Every structure is written in structure tokens, then in C-alpha cells.
Length: 67
Image (cartoon, rainbow, N blue to C red; front, side, top):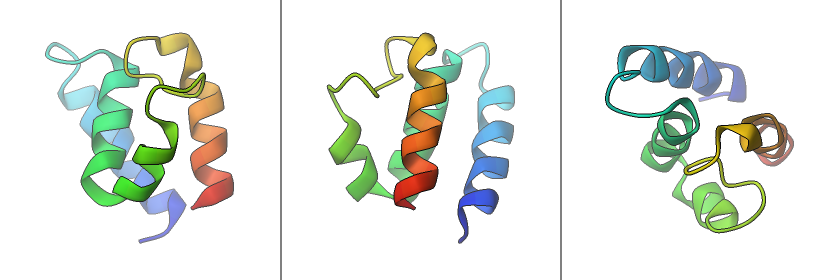
């Protein structure tokens, strides 16, 4: 899976789960389903969008760079 394929899947996941999960939470959870190594590196840092959607841009930049 490429980063672009992951991003497409994550976007669809976020849209389809928008009532159950905030956007940052959905992207984070989708990443955890395919790249737990990256999720573990992000968890609890200033890049973690799980509780703060404002971190989503930095999160996506990190994921792309480290894919």
C-alpha cells in the first residue's frame, strides 16, 4: 500500500464514520489499522490528532514523510 492509497482509504473512512468519530480520531484509527509502527511513534505527541483535529495537518505530513 502506498501513502496515497492509505490517504484515500483514510479519507473515505473519516467521511463514513463522521458521526462516530472526529476527523483526527478517524485518520488516527485508520492508520493504526495498517501501520501500527507509525501510530506508536505519534501517540501522545504534538502530532497526535486523536483528541485535537488541529493537529491533522502535521500528522498527515509526518505520515507521508515516514511512510
